[in-house]
Length: 113
Image 1 (tube, rainbow, N blue to C red):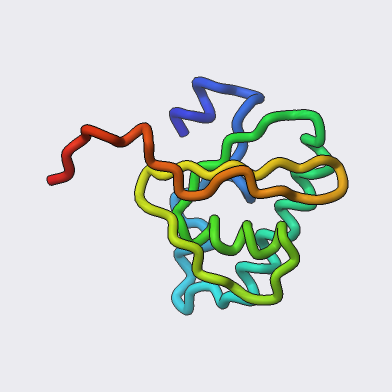
Image 2: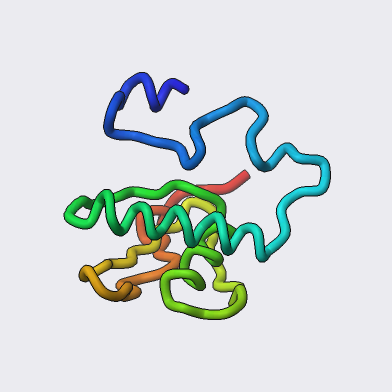
């Protein structure tokens, strides 16, 4: 909620932010449901933000599904995404291109405990 407040009008959460969101249902979300949810979100972003640079912050599993949807893969491929890693995907109006994935250069010299 702090991010929404600080960057009002420039930040959004898919489906809105709620303390009890889609992830809190007792049965969880199937992979097919995740693909469907991410595909709808991605299509919306392609239309509403075609000329914008978007920053997406999420867990690695969502990025796996996002890449699969963007590149037309029929199933999750299990691309590795380390904690705090960065990926870049560019959309040219017709198709997505992978620029880099799992970049961690910004973490060199940091210690993990």
